[in-house]
Image (tube, rainbow, N blue to C red; front, side, top):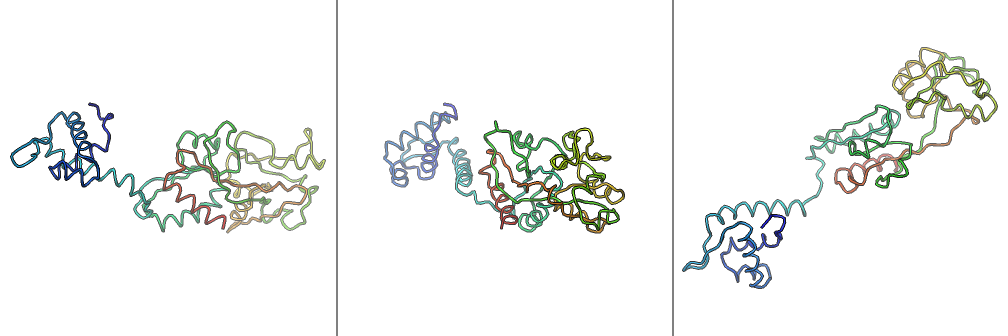
Length: 307
């Protein structure tokens, strides 16, 4: 008999039989009939290719094979019982790695408090964060990360991704504190004549607020807003803005943090150029929906940022 053909209930009966060496006592202990105990014994004899219990003048005796099985089966069933019933997650003893993808603005804004909480309550946990610009949901779909923080939407064809709203963000204009616009009232007309830096994560060469200028008639295809600086990530933007006349249109939390200990200012975007608020979501795949570590971390992120 193959292992896949055995019913675990037969092993439970066998465990009690090997301990009690008595069919009726085993039946009484398990609240089943004696014929059921006998059938289970026959199934296990076929599985182990051994009599397991043999009659003697004093009742049943264990074969040498049964003696070795007795210890192993008790340990195996105890482990299985813990696996099924004792799954309470203990953050303090968790030694797993948690993997997350997000762009720098979202990670800088939302994860420091989360990591602080994790260090206090799950000190053995390792947090791995990937901020390299790429297609946001590829790693999630492939199973390479547990979570994604993003303002984007997953492919409509992907039906196995869950999400939870975390926060909404707006934008600021990051510029040197010595920039001519740093202390002036900002208007779309004044800004149309300025120099901008573009952070292009996917090869897009159009300024993120270019369409706003076009809607106001302040730029067009033949005369776009000047963008003499193109970057492929966010990290370099503060230093470039601090030492040039280039202005960046950036998420507010990132822009405000960039000003700390730098000769920079983060100015509100004029009404006519403002983009709608962008919602940041936490995404995860169905494969981790019921994972206890991931459930715990989801609750932490929501508690810290949506309360």
